[in-house]
Image 1: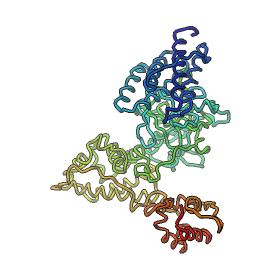
Image 2: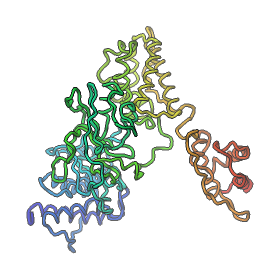
Image 3: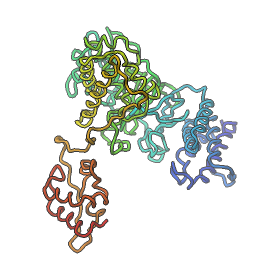
Length: 586
């Protein structure tokens, strides 16, 4: 392509990107201030120009540009995107287009303008098929993805061309920031990886297939159906240990595609799901809906002939032994996303929309049809009833207002029960079986969550019975209720009797002739678990709060009732008393 129009266009966008990078230095808040385009735009464009035979050396006559940097970013994003749709160009163009599209989105503050710009970029790329392309030693280049979500099921806004981090080191995860080039990331498979080996475990009528080479070790199968998928036992799979519907449901939930099944020896049709990418918590990208996965040349990524192409898991930590597929190494390297909020909602703690939808499907697909009380009651329910109930729970437990926005909110829920004359025995059975479904779905089992969950199930189901009686007049136009933790009992608010004893913090206490202060000597004495256990009353890391309650805290310290897992040594109690005596210095 040397001397071609393509080379000229590449040289033009690279030159403009260099000038823009220089002008943006120091102006950016959402990305690195120094050379903000160096790794994500300049490097891939330079590599692309060299690949087509061009000279990428920096010239001394780079022209100055005028105009608003945001407008220049937008113009450059469009021009590089137009290059991206050209056939057979190096993948560096795709990577640069992804970075510039995202940067243009960041620079656009108005929501309507953002929507219009995304639509314009989508129009430029409209002729490209949706797919995920694995860049050699680089990111996952995602084209025209229709849905990307976090582990709670909430939408992550991505552009028509997106680069997802594969090395695990990006500061803008899940988006790529070019870190793979800085750290010398390798996308090669390791020679010592578990080989592809599809084993069959015959059953009647279900035969389970398992390929350990594809397993991402999510643990969903062993957690949800341990009688069939037996951890640390041989053979790993015992099809006679569960019902057919339970086995099929568990196999279909396998995110990596390592598990499969045959019915009477025949391969069943694949699941029909909308294409989606889930960024799982501390783990891989989970792909569903048959999004094509291709290599650098556009050919299907090699995998076992029996492996699912409808769903698969892609490494996100950068350490898989079976790249690009996840091999479970994120567990061993301690790959972690930013920690959740200190006081999560019930919705967050439960696992969001995916977890609650999983629970409602188990309830309505497994328990209701076989129950003599509930089966007739739900015989004519709408096909999307499990999704509706999950949306209600999402909103009730503190998540997005899904039920209000999609189904009509409180008034619609009241109308669904009006005149049905629900009976107490139906309600009691519903409450009993939804709790079993929560167990099967892997919802948290800690006492705090289950107290709140059971409290809502009892309260909500009794209100539903009340509203359903003939002549009932529920108050109209109420908001969807918002449920919370019971009596402030949040996760981490107490020390579990089964938890290992945490180490005491190493804090140097001041000598008698040295000044004592809260920040240097008192706050470090209180562990995070101590802070959480008292958070319903005051903050042990707050100088003002501890000053206000100092005498009461000292009394409990002297009694040995605080902290709750063991008394302080005498020298620490004395230091706290001295801090009070000296006027609670900060």
